[in-house]
Image 1 (cartoon, helix red, strand yellow):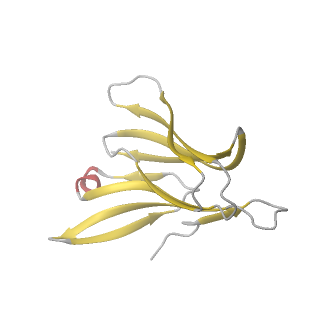
Image 2 (cartoon, helix red, strand yellow):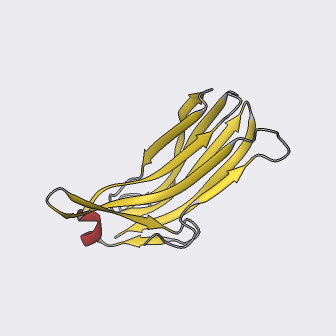
Length: 143
């Protein structure tokens, strides 16, 4: 069963053909040989993943789908802040552009780290230099 608030859909206002974005966070859990089950997270709550759960995880990531009916040039940027056992302060990873183009239907899966530590992640959708959508500050901890 998906978590409450696990999917967010946003669209640009006042346009005849709005740009839409759907976003969710999923962790794929190994349930046995060749059996995987998705576990969805509430993007507005901090998640805690135990060491045992992390070992059973095949992948965890943010999924975004952007529908761009008019084919405008868009870019998708990923931000991550981390605090691992070796670090004393949060470390901000440089913004990483994970997509740039004018495709009409774009879907991306961005891996989230599963090593021990605390993380804050976010995705940002831009049209030229204008921020359209912000899916920021999903916080989780891997113990």
